[in-house]
Image 1: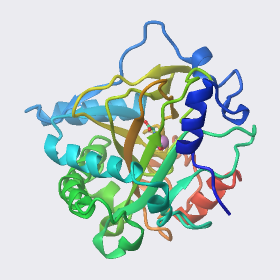
Image 2: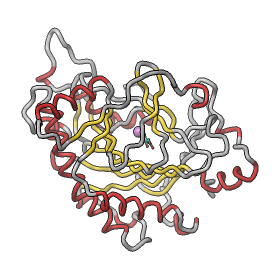
Image 3: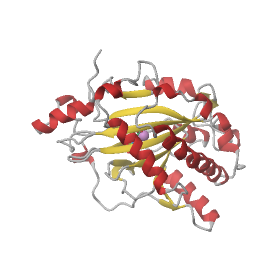
Image 4: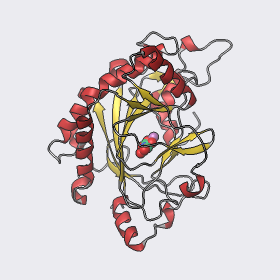
Length: 333
Ligand code: OGA
Ligand code: NI
């Protein structure tokens, strides 16, 4: 079956100046109607190079509890490494369509190039194509579904991981010690060295009616936490105090958001943030989230250290794959 990619729909739509009806969100979702423009604080920004590391820990805990998201600056990943990682990903989406289809996602598979096929409950579609593949740990990688072009694709991803993996470890430590746990607790509870990192590249083509469409509809991530680098076209929005607020584009920052598994492990102390993404009239937006996930049969539940008679478990304990199955099929957890 031939799948219609948003990239192709976008080129047709740009001539017409309108988008197909299935991309027009209902009014309560349309960014033109629901984006908040009043006074609201910016997403927290955390400087990892701050010599007062206790303060860094406190700020990370505060941001993760109040917002569930923050922007990291001076995170230690060199700018040229991120730029190259972004260049090769962008190159893939600019290849001829038949090249991209060679690594198309097969039904039931997590990895590959794709477009959301199922409509959402309200029957609407999102303005995005994507590519998913694991990037860590090395022994689970399936290079058959990695882009073969450009030839530097693999090296650029390896290089990014070389810096990202230690940064992830460091974040696990701040998030553990900040709530009174030994520094290795959250990492171990997330699968230790078997924890997986899944890359998604989002490609949001220009959209002639950006006020009516969404790139990614409102959701929380299933991950423990997610580290995202965007291109310079803003679009990420976060739900804060019931308002959809724009994340400011900060050059060279990495956006870190808490996902469902950390909300569960922390028994609700850390918030899995609701977020969505908007699209741009003239420019292609791209983003590169990396989802840190437990291995599929790893069991996740509120940590016993954080549960007491006064603070009983707020979430069920279950295998990550069962959590994922319920979430993807919209079955209550
Ligand atoms: C996602 C996501 C946001 C963005 O793909 O899970 O939240 O800014 N993307 O592209
Ligand atoms: Ni997300």
